Image (cartoon, rainbow, N blue to C red; front, side):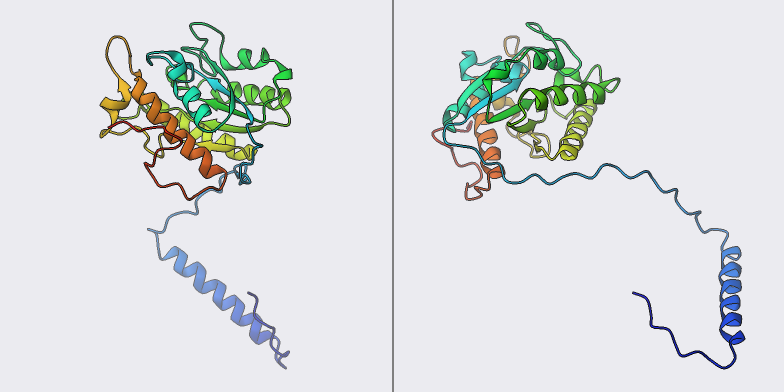
Length: 267
């Protein structure tokens, strides 16, 4: 807040002398403090995140859940017991599940290409109300070279293919604990990039969906599961995901750990 100016004095040299004296004092103090740190360089401003509005969907929306082996339903007794199927049914969605094992933004999968190529091959006539893009921990060994460019290209293609769809990005969940550094950085990058677009972002890492307390129940670390969610783990993840979607919709009356539409968390 600027102070109001005083009436002009009869001797204008006095204010000028005062200013000169003040400058001299500041300079003297500066030289007298050799320990003072130099001014920090001004960093280039980052693109500001856009706060998305509440997620609104019609009754029985058509939802495309796109991702990797976790979306596929790997390690569940049946793939259709994977979290994407279970959450979609609980939420009353018309769910289209598109999961490719081993796939990521950079990494081709066992049964298909990387995310960008897979998105380019999506059927535009699907016309979903919501698209959920999950993952992916499969990029952690290739990250960071080319990662941001690959994500940007994939998301641009997705928005172009389904311009009327709402888009939620579901970050990677840890397959091992502690969370690997590359996985944590991928999570941070995706959160930042989604914010720049005004898209919703759900972080299983930040929300600690998988912790030391429930890891052995959620993740099958044996030869069959190979660090994928068990059937019980998929049910638990479905509950956490459904809860997160409800919160994005502004339905905040859900009690933590309360089952949603019959989904039971692991014991």
